[in-house]
Amino acid sequence: MSAPMTPGAGIKAAAAALFLLFLAAAAELTARVIPFQEDEVARITAILRQDPELFWTQKPGLDTEFAGTPLKTNSLGFRGREPGPKKPGIKRIVLMGASPAFGWGVREEDSYAALLERALAKAGKEAEVINASVIGYSSWQGLKLLDLTISGLKPDLLIVAYGVNDVDKYRFFRTSGLSDRELGPRSAVMTAAENFLASSRFVALYRRMIFRLSGINRDLYGAPGAAFKITRRVPEAHFAENLSAFAQKAAALNIRVLFVTSPFISPLPTLRLPPPGAAEAETLYHRALLAKGEERAAWLKKVKAAELYDCYRLMGTYNETLRRITTKEGLAIADLEKVFSAADGGQRPVYFLAPAFDFVHFSPEGHKAAASLMTPLILKMLK
Image (cartoon, rainbow, N blue to C red; front, side, top):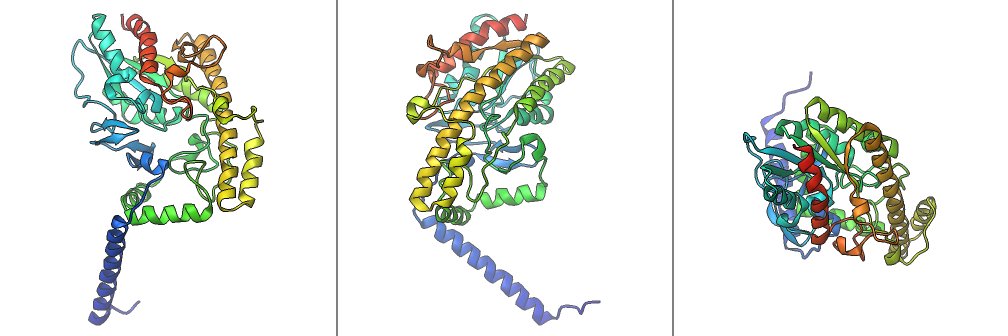
């Protein structure tokens, strides 16, 4: 049996704890007065909080600016007004997707969720459209969200618009060599600790210093020390299974589903490179690991270029998978990729927010095109 702590020892322990708290507070206060420019990843994750099951959610109750536009979130962390109880006689539509559906870089009233609601009202259909899209989400996270939150909203129709993050390799949090499905939940205690640390300016400065010392810019590619990942967040086989699972879960809940393909403009005109091979990004990454400082950053830019092209190429394949499944199972589809396509087979730049460097987010014109395509389909489905 251990000896009981003496009063003197207890006082020393308490004093040591207070001293450590003083040091932590001093470090935090000092960090808050140091000029500090956050990188793009930090600006994105500032509106997110980690979640044990969903990996992350958008923070509830936000009233801020994000991607150059005002952003308000409700108690569920979704963009827009509070859902509230379902009203008799009014159809409830829930849009589930990633940042293009969320309305990255456009005002809430210019997103296709808001445009759809107004278009349906103009057509005489009383309906509310809840935008439950979350930036960075994959179809696997969407399935989890359906089970944990969306089913409780009792929608009459789901619009499912995932894909652009499924083909990626990296997440905002918990990047690893595992797919989303393989990653699994995290302990609530660990998640709470990570969220607490995320609020610390001192921790942010320390991490930024580590990033710079490692020679890796998070805006360019991945996280410091991370090995090159072969596995996509949602491999194509998993993507197909997730789509079928959405249809099955919705049918069990008597919910109609409208699937949406994901436009992705080619990055090649911007990158000014020939189409890289599938294995080129991995080769370039290993070259980067042998370099240091600015030379490493230069190599990592080439890695990012090769990866962007691979994501673009894969997105076309995933969209074909979606078309095949909806045709086979008799499901509704809004083929947005085709609507965004130009006569030469490429995508229409006018429909993208900043086509010179942003290859997936829609401009206000793109959101209008999306709403125009979906409105008649939804009116037919809600008859």
